[in-house]
Image (cartoon, rainbow, N blue to C red; front, side):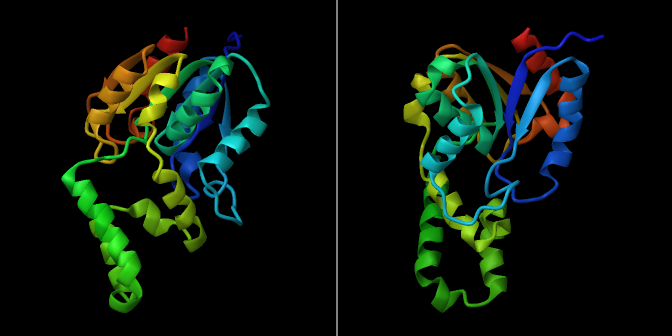
Amino acid sequence: MVKKKPLIYILHGWSPRQSTLKMWKPFLKLLDDAGYQSKYLKIPGLSQELNETWDMSNYLDWLEVKLNDKKDLILLGHSFGARLWINFCSRNSNNVKKLILIDAGGIRDQSIKSQIKRKTFWLAAKIGKKIFKGDFFRKLLYKLARERDYLEAPPGLRKTLSNVLSKDVTPLLDKVKCKTLIIWGKNDRVTPISNAYTMNKMIKNSQLKLIEEGRHSPQFTHPEKVFKLVDKFLT
């Protein structure tokens, strides 16, 4: 019989698609087969219905209720979920033993391209009712800007997305005191690899591992490779 290993709390990325848990199952099975316990937390507004607009403080309050001041926590998060864990660790550092970040979101891109994109969306929001009356033009704008998550989110959830994405986690990184494993797909086009190096530099007790052929969700495309890194880090 496989000896039970520590419990891992898992937060998924920002995706309103109902297939998210199904995509995690191969990786979760590898954890289970190795004796790990895992608790997949369904993020309000994504895996669960959300009837009001939230900001980061609402998500942190939700997490603190869920975890109920537990100690020696082991946390794993992907993309938006990793962003939430960074925020959580910055104010609950004494409760967290180890943190695993997979292609984490949260560092605001200051490139000229991203600044132009943000200004374009701001302008579209201001004049959209006059210029982009048709649903076709609105969808085209979002697709050109690769804002798939925003496009797929229901209208009430878009404000929540705007609220949480406006907060840069960079000032919080040096407040993450626990041992941290940063896993990144080398070909990630959603969160640039430069963010991985920044997090590795600013989280003092961290190590960075790259998945050579991985993109933004290596736990889906390369579950065995991600599992081996996680298992080695935890054991």
